[in-house]
Length: 490
Image 1 (cartoon, rainbow, N blue to C red):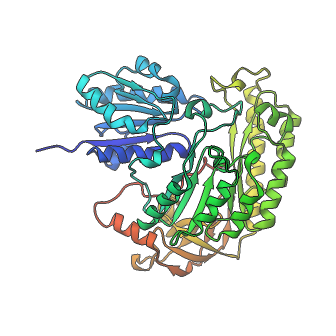
Image 2: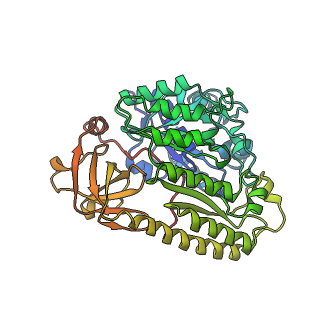
Image 3: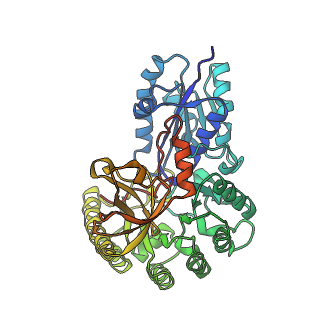
C-alpha cells in the first residue's frame, strides 16, 4: 500500500509570491503530493512531508524570520523521517548557498526564475541525499505556464509580465526578479478564457509594473488594449490590476478603464512620498504634481473610483518638511486606503548606504501621524457611501467575525470590504462567488456594513464553482483569491 505524501507551502510577501505559491502547489500535486490538512498548516507545516518556504526579501528582518523558522523546522524534521524542506522566492534568489550553510537540513533551494524545477530538485535531493541549490538568472518559463492549485474557484491571478526595469533606490526586486519580460496578449487572453470556462468570474492582471506591459515588444498602448480585450470575454464579471507605476500611467489606460464595463473602478497607485526631493532620491521618475494630476483625471473619468496607495515613511534624508509634503499630498489625494511602511534598510539597495538615515523614534512618530491622517480620510470617504447601494461579490476569508455577527463579507466593485447581514438559513444565504445589491448602513475606516440584508441576489457560475469545489472533501483556505498589496493600516 502506497502512502500519499503531503505538502504545505508557506508564503511571505507580495502578490507575485502568492501567484507563484499557487504554481508551486500545482506542481507538487501534479507530482503526486496532496495538500496537508489544516492542522499541519497551522503548525508551520509540521505534519507535512514536504514544506516549502516561498520567501520575500523586501522588508527588514526578512532573513531573520526565515532563519528562525528554519531553525524551528530542524527539530521537526528530526522527528519526521523522510521530510523535505525547500526554500524558494526572493530570499533564496538573494542568499543562494548561504541558506544551506546556515541551515544544512534544507533539501532544496530554488530561485524566482526556476519555480518549475522544484519537483525535480526534491527528487534529486531524495535520491542523492544531498542538498540541491539551483538558481537561474534568466526566467525559464512564465509561472502562468505551470500547473496551478488556485485558492479560489471564482477569482484568479493572471500574470502579464515578470521582472521590473525600474531602479528605485529602496527596492531589491529588480535585482532578484530581473528585467521585465512580457507575455504575448494572445497567451494572456487564452488563459483568461480557460479560467472563465472553469467558473472564474474575477481576474487580477498581475505585474511588478503592470502598466509598463508591452515595453518588451514595443507597444506602449498594449496594456490599455489588453484591458479592452478583457471586456470582450463573455462571463468575465470583474477585472482588476496591480500594481501600476505613475511614470507609465497614461490617459489611454484611464479611457480603457472608464469605457470597459467589467474593468473595476479601483486603482492602486503607489505614491511612496509626497516630497519631490525624496522622490528624486528614490529614483521615482514623477513628482507630486504629476501624481495628483493622474488622480484628478481618473476621478474625472470615473467619479466613483476608489484609489489606494503605498507610502514609505522615514526614507534616508527625509526632513520634517519632506514629511509634511507627504501629508499634504495625502490630504489632496483622499485615498480610500493607504498601505504605509516604515523605511527599513535592505542590503544590496542604493538606499542602504545613503547618508542621513532617519532615527527610529523620528520614523515612528511620523508613521503614527500619517496613519492617523490616512484613517481619518478613509473614514470620511467611506461615510459618503452610507445610504447608497453597491454591488457586492461575496467571498469566504474576508470577514473574520462573519460567523458571530451573522454576516457574509465580500467586495464592492471598487474593492471596498462590505459585511452583509444574511439569513440564518443556508438555503437563503448567498454562496461565495454570488453577487447581490446591498444598501450601506454603516461605515468604518476600513470596511462598510449592510445590515438591511441584500436584494437582487444573482446565483453565479462562480458560486456554482465554489459549491462544486466544496461539495466533496472539504477544501481549505478558499478565499477571494485577491490578496492585497499589503494590509491596510491598523
